[in-house]
Image (cartoon, rainbow over all chains, first blue to last red; front, top):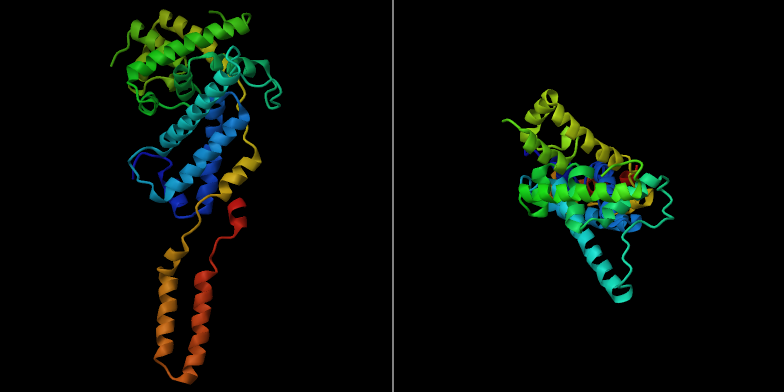
Length: 185
Length: 132
């Protein structure tokens, strides 16, 4: 047995265990939606990414090799790659159609956001360079360990800390511009 | 391991004020520094301001339909595997016996074989099992 807390569930899913599938969806689907939303700033796109990541997990489960990687880290990598695919396509569309207008922020009519603070945080995240955003999302919002995040991003721990520090400085600057009464530079 | 103010500042700038986010191998030493250093506590307060702002952001809630779609595509038990299991061998054994017995006994045992076959094949997954 490895130190992967999801290992047993994944192996059971691979054998077609319906209860294990429900448990894995309950634990991971909201987590993947949060990850993708923080990266993309779009709930519909986030749900699409989370769905695709879980479908890939279903394909992988029957052949899952314990000890090769923690399932949660593997699933994050799949979802992050899907997010980058979408960000790349979004850049291509924008460069073809709206070269002067780039806004990765959430649309104002997303009903589930009912607080300005949530929109401001998402706008500040969207304003970060993608790698800094990824580092902050993985370590702060998804609470991956530094080792897991560095491995997932294929960088050293020192490089991860540099991305995180620059990301947090960027967030502080952006949020102090958006809400100067609430947060100082 | 010890953590000085310079390294503590790096940790705070990268990971914020929540000790749960700090590097595991430095966490205890960093918490010890906080307990004994006014300067460390001041750094912590500044980072906590940003953390509080980030943590107050609402999490998106996935729709029920999304979970339904994902569960519908989850792996199902492998039926071929079922035939190689005990129930499958029971059916094969029953069928073998049928071939070696007289006609009168054959009818009775054939019925038993069909019963075993039913038991081996009626465990296919009910959709409702997946969605509670």
